[in-house]
Image 1 (cartoon, rainbow, N blue to C red):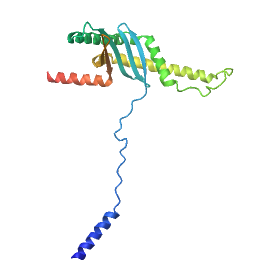
Image 2 (spheres, helix red, strand yellow):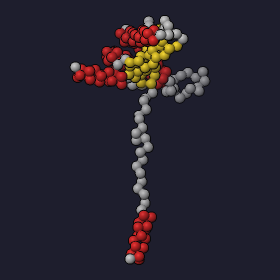
Image 3 (spheres, rainbow, N blue to C red):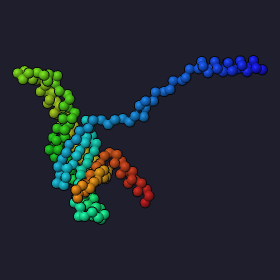
Length: 211
């Protein structure tokens, strides 16, 4: 019996030592979120504040935001609440004014095209940057610059059109993203993104279904 137990123990030890561990699957980066593409930003001055537009290289708007401010009469809760409401309304008015007016102007297209060139085309310089001033630029470089200018204008025009088409949804997706009390004033930022628009639509459907 002892001999049998000893033999069985020896077999188990040999089996354990001879078994190679199974390789684990390489899951590094499997759940890594895709990084957003590079973006550019343009600013536009309205009567009630400045609007900031963030867009990508394909001419898709990423974020629209505006800030509004209001003075505090005193430090009471009611004064703070009133100032927050006024600042929020001013920020929303800035966004509304841009969507209803300035977004359609040629000035907006030119400014977006300039931001596009500065952020997405500036790295694409000709290979003869070290040429002396006496060396005239070849005609091919002029053609490249003209092509880039035309491309930037096309992207800007497409972006403006997409914003116009989504203007109603953008206004519904506006939400407060920042607020602060600074030197007796309230500053509020409102923003709209594609995600906030989708969230607003879900809330609207949920509320409609509950009626």
